[in-house]
Length: 235
Image (cartoon, rainbow, N blue to C red; front, side):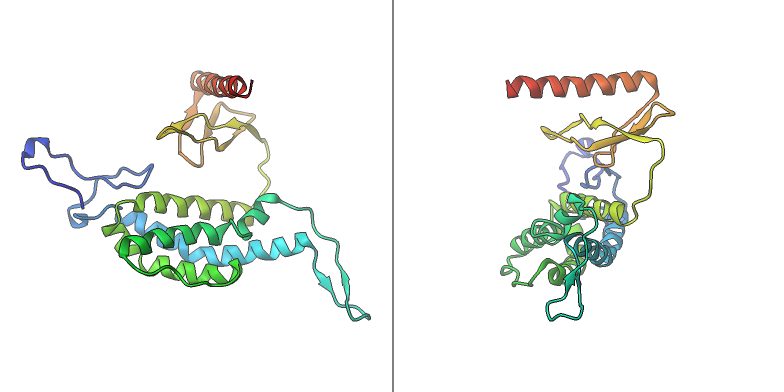
């Protein structure tokens, strides 16, 4: 819960703890850590994750090559589609299931509950993980101080999955390097994209924005400084 100082002149209105939100909490949200709009958005993203995962899992199976039953007993194998490492990473052991499981583990620890049971493969585990997080989301937003990081983790995970599933050509968009913003002593390093027709870009992870030629030069200078520092460390 947010602490109220005895001296009201020092009082600061509580704000949502979700990174990138910072919205002042309503009076009806007193005692919460995350705002209701973030709770609603997280519930919606969780509800969409199982279907997104199934589509990614199907794509991954095609990448590995599907078994085609023929006249022989063993069948033959269809040629796989070109691999996309980001798809295989999301459906594999360290992907969607593992990232959701890490959130469940931290919530269970905070609640004093036993560790989660074994739920099988990632494809089998994801629906159960989503159900647990959905069932306990209200508690987390109101009673778990670190919930903001988990809300952000779900947002990023959902974004990664939906970006692949709903992949559409981005004509004119090109990679312009990594995000140089430092958040809590950690480099964001998210891939940035921009149109060749304008000086404008935004980071999908930390939500930093650069618009106009002057900010564009500042962005390039910051990226070059990061690269120079990395080269110095490597040397």
